[in-house]
Amino acid sequence: MKKGMVILLCALFAIAAFANQDDTATLGQDKIQQNIRSISPQDNEIDEFGALHDPVLMLQFNEGPQNHTFGIAWDGQYYWTINGGNSTGLLNRFDEDGNYLGVTNVTIDGRGIVFNPIDGLLYISSYQGNIFRIDDPFTDYATTQVGTGIMQNGQASMGMSWDGTLLYDFYQGVTEVHDFFTFDLLDSYTGFQYGGGNFGGECSIIADTDYLYTIDAGTNELFVYNISDGNYVGTFVLPFGDNGLSLSIANNMIFYNIDSSYDIGTWYGYSLRDWTEGPVTLTLTGTTTTVPSTGGDVVYDVSVVSTIGLALQGLGYETYVTLPNSQVFGPLMSLNWNLVPFMNVTVVGMSQYIPDYAPEGDYYFEGRAGFLNIPAYTLTDGFPFTKIGAAADGEIVFNPEDWVASGSFITGDNADVVEMPTQFEMQTAYPNPFNPTTSVAIVLPSASDLTVSVFNVMGQQVATLANGRYNAGQHSFVFNAANLSSGLYFIQAQVPGELNAIQKVTLMK
Image 1 (cartoon, rainbow, N blue to C red):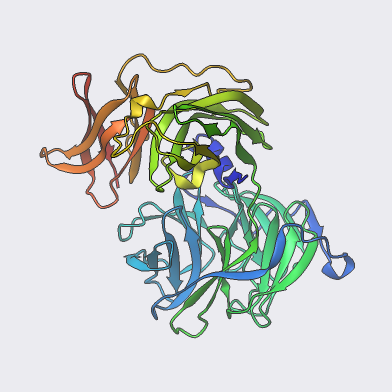
Image 2: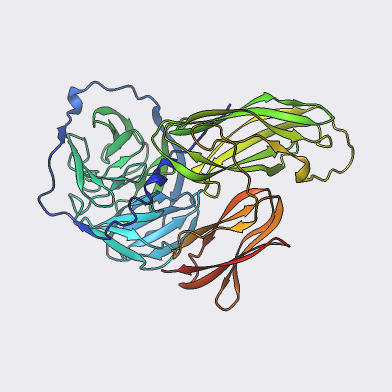
């Protein structure tokens, strides 16, 4: 059985906590030096690598000769790279396969780039050790300097903790750990290995959930340390690359490039870990997986296990069925649920009715849970089942109302029943004002035809967020105005004979 995993799900807990932080923070020369830990790799036995394995090249793509290609980040939809070498820094955008999509001029002599899942924004460390926030990656010059002289060295490429709360700064063996938003110095390690010079790796560090990584670009040795105590774990060799400043982590891969001489940059994405487990897991276990020709229920148990003290509300749960012809049918169930700290809950006996006219053959039942409009924050799992024979021949028209789903999903630390909505409703868009995206939820008490459109002040339709039939439940839609001008927009939700609601939102770039 395949278990879904979301490494970044936990990061969303801190959105409200950092909403009121100052835009700019400056650290003087008297940086806090308590809690310094000295690590000597030669004095430590190499720990077991655990989930680590030899590097496997997963992705390779080129950039044009646009100064040096330094850092790369992944926002769940695009790869973003930052160029440096002079003040006309360029922010390049690529799809998941490394195909070039476009460029934004940020006028930042960049060194490193990260995507912070807490606020959903890109951040760049620049020459002279400053930190910039990218307010809109699709608009030229839409940046804000939020930190001055933060990095130990003016060439440093910053690292970030997987949940977006910590900033890592490395220079010649010393790792400083800062609060990502206030830049307060929280901890420090010494004794990390590195290569000579900024391109050699003397000021580059990255982090995942368990490890810190530094590099010697002269030998392509990647040094691994435990993130909890800084203890040395071991060393790997990356087959390709020569630019220590390019060391990055994006989309669960370690990236490293060849570009230390203003040549065409080539990015290499390596896998060193098998991401089979995460802090929150969803498991569906089929208990009745054979359906007779006359129709019947597929019965299953569903469980959510969390190993972290995180609480999230307003999550969704949907189910889908893949037919024998590979067509995906659904969502058949649409419910809401809440994640509670250290949740370990199983709901027994949920069911999905398969009607008699469904064709015989092998099916796959899938559940999806989380923030369903963001693939990177969605857990998935499922199981196969079989339909033996069918009660009808010829062309089949699938009617969603015949596929009845029963049972209640998880709403807290027990299996309370989720109340289905009793009235049609358009909920308040959030955030508002926004830049460049805002989300709006539509509540349907029964399966309905729903249209959600966006209009400008001239009455011109600028976006369609929904246009189709949706099951009962709450459905969230994202309005992305990255390519639109600042101003007022109107989101209209329509269900024939039931709902005609309009909401005003303000785009502020």
